[in-house]
Image 1: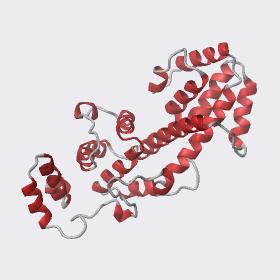
Image 2: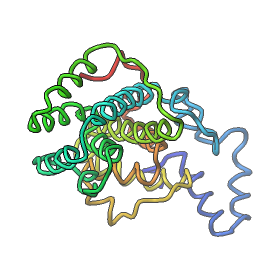
Image 3: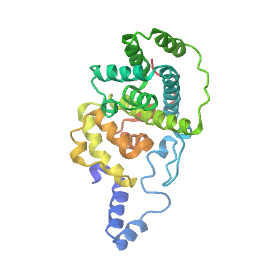
Image 4: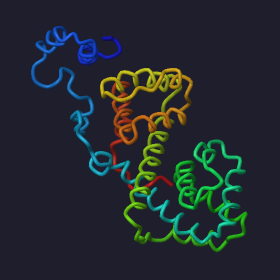
Length: 272
């Protein structure tokens, strides 16, 4: 325990005692700790408040993430506006061509029913391809000979974005999909900088972080064989936006402060 968790071993063991209803041993450990938690919050050392139960908006806590959310929101709105010009028959052709493409990874497309409407289709495309959604949509529209829509996507993606009015319910849906996609992309970009050995260590340390934060654990039988993409999907499914904070705490344990900084930093704009 001490080798793996250092000073945090006391906090971890104390939480286990609480689960076991051994309040006498909890009290004994607590009496040795005065003031803040013995090890302090590793995340607080990087200027992020992580009080238990405290909710943070994406804007306040993750500047790098909010930038991605804004980008993905623009992508979703652009695709919704463009594909609205497809007839029902053309939308069916669009979905068939999209599914026939030999992409390496398309879990959200595989779950897309052929009866899905335009809105669900756009959400599936964005959750699958992220910032590549516009490019992949253009590829399909070219095959459909809808070059007018390809041109519209090209003009909109290169020029200034104008805000379109959408109803409150749709706006909430767009934000939810944009946030989920942004979290997934940010984590994937960061995890790709880990060696295989570091990635396996991250999986192991994650179990303790889930426990400390009282989050639902991912069964090891699913976690152990997962590659980076599958791992991120499991994390986002279980923890949602909080996945970023959880992974950052594991990076701190691994002394990968460069990756911690990347999750916290504001970049000058979305990566090209």
